[in-house]
Amino acid sequence: MLKGDRLVLREVAKKDLHTYLRYWSDEDICKFDGGLKEIPTINDLYTFFDAIFRSKKKYLSIDNEKGVIVGYVTYISMENDDKRYIIGITIDKKFWGRGYGTEAMMVVMKYLFNELDAESISLEVLLENERAGKCYRNCGFIAEKVKDEKIMIDGKCKDILVMKMNRKEFLKIVDKI
Image (cartoon, rainbow, N blue to C red; front, side, top):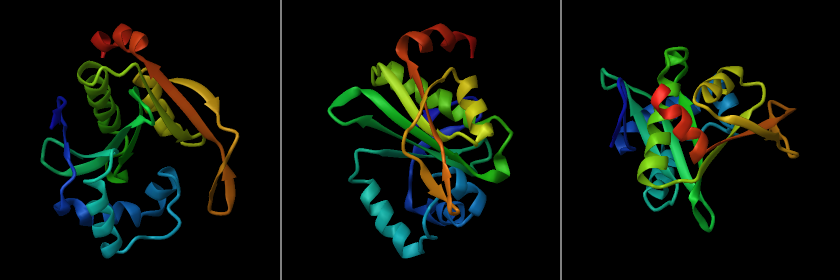
């Protein structure tokens, strides 16, 4: 369990399934979360959650000060390199604009850099997702490149921006946040 000022990031539990199903059934959330091809069923989610507990990729539910799930964050070390991590975050659109994404990102970044001794953290974001891009820049991430390959969402090719934060840059900003 990881704690911020207003948030608790905890291991995903099966009780979270219906909240996740709601997220993955929401067109706006899915559009910015990689564009799910089809809405999963509750049985799909049970299968998915069983796989989570065997996976190297970690999923953490984000609870606010009232104990309400406001989203989730994922992280995984890059293949054959446990010092470089890839992270992702999804916030329920009911909670957009409240700073939960920024706080959750900072909590995870502190954990990865301070506890797991990460050297760098990267993420991918749709170039058109200005809200997420602003969040990541506020956390100190720097745009690295636009990927050559695109993602297809709603029949349109979308650009993916890769952003990165290294340990040196993190240490410069961590006390200011």
